[in-house]
Amino acid sequence: MIIDYTMKILLVVFLLLPLSLCYGEPARPNTALTFYIADDNLNTSHRGVDIIPLAELVDFTINGVAISGPSSMVETGVNTGVFQIQLTLPSTVNGRQLQDGDVVLMTYHQKADYSGNPQTITQSRVLNVIPANPIASSVQRVRIGHDFTLRLYAPNFNLDSYRPDDIPLSFVEFRMGGVKTTLADSAFHVNTFALRETGHNTDTFEATFKIPTKVDGFPVEIGSTLEFRFTDSSEPSPSSSSVFVMVGSYGVPTGSSSGITQPNVVSEPPLIPQWVKKLTSYWCSGSISDNEVRQAIKYLASGKMITLPSGEQSDISLVKANLCLWTASKVSDFQATKSFANLVR
Image 1 (cartoon, rainbow, N blue to C red):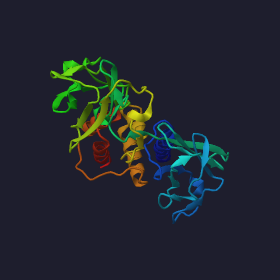
Image 2 (image 1 turned 45 degrees about the horizontal axis):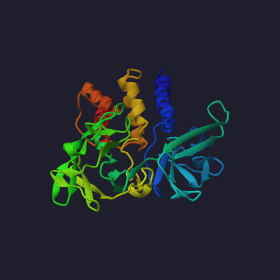
Image 3 (image 1 turned 180 degrees about the vertical axis):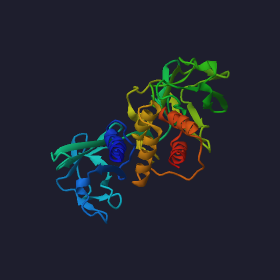
Image 4 (image 1 turned 135 degrees about the horizontal axis):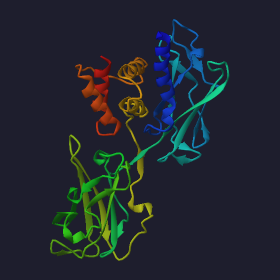
């Protein structure tokens, strides 16, 4: 009975480890991605930590192109049978810089599973990029009376992962010389009532409007410079970013990169691996019990796959409600780690 229960917990954890195939973690060039391999056949030193050479055992590719990887993987602890691989990402692949949506694939050629048969196990990470500047324009030179699109990258305003969100037009300030107003000014004739998210869970917001002939009674003249400034008030220390465009007699095609800031790759890894949300969602739907998810989180914490802060114990119903909100991206990862810490105490 105890063995069956233990195997059930391990099955939940080990089956969810490869779910990173669907739930990628952000990364940046020249930093490390972490993969985990669970194979007790490699656990040969039961009183020590095993270090396993990866030659002919693990392959790495980015978008199908082979890349070099580490020479070995290290057991996460004494007699755990779980091994950690740290892959340092290259800056380029075949001369091309890493881009949004690139897929890093790890393939593990297991020599023998529990039945003694060889099998292939894959895990992946999807690279996500963010703009260097949160605010960008569709063109660098604008024409009076012509359409102009303003874009914002604002993940803190993405409150609903399943439906597009909105940012009030008043959050974008417009400046021209001594004139100062916001996009909510009726002079701009914005085609929507807000900056609208471009899709569900994209973190990118847009508004299209015509460059007016006058703002606050002052004419918009050819050769003048227009500033659009966005202040992210959701941050503990609000920061502002601006994009500048010039009023001219011709426009740059929307597809030109001259008016769009080049992307940087996400710099900070999440506090919790994305696939842990899947495990938690099973708990929220009643597919696994409180004790099962508690034991699974304890296992992940013991393998240092998740770091739990100190905290006071709370009612299980409140903890569960908070973590279910986290699966819907309505609670931060930091708050979720505190809830997980309360859960396992």
